[in-house]
Length: 122
Ligand SMILES: [Zn+2]
Image (cartoon, rainbow, N blue to C red):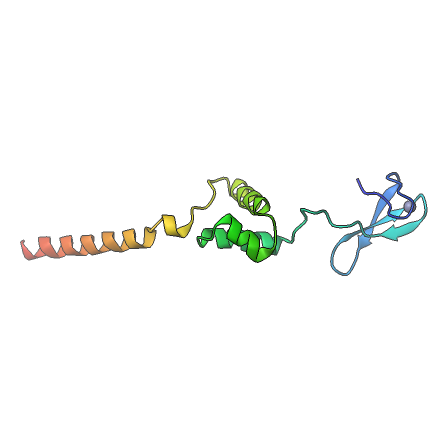
């Protein structure tokens, strides 16, 4: 529900297109003036949210991401959780805790060694 910044009416607020930056504009039928509601405190751009999630995946901790982006670290936690919920999986694990690439290389190495071993003995 939006509130007219001119007469503070919350009734008869109708959508009236969008401004240049894409924000929803409203027309107040009480005083017949148009306005763009103030963005909500949590209304950070999607690009920033995605950047925060990406930094988390890259192994930065919440507080560091928060400092870089200039937001509360709780906000960053919410973003990561929201991102995970949207993907319907667990929150992404920081890369440094995984070591998946090393493991893959190890398996490839062992596999090739094994192949070479069996072929030389048959
Ligand atoms: Zn008004």
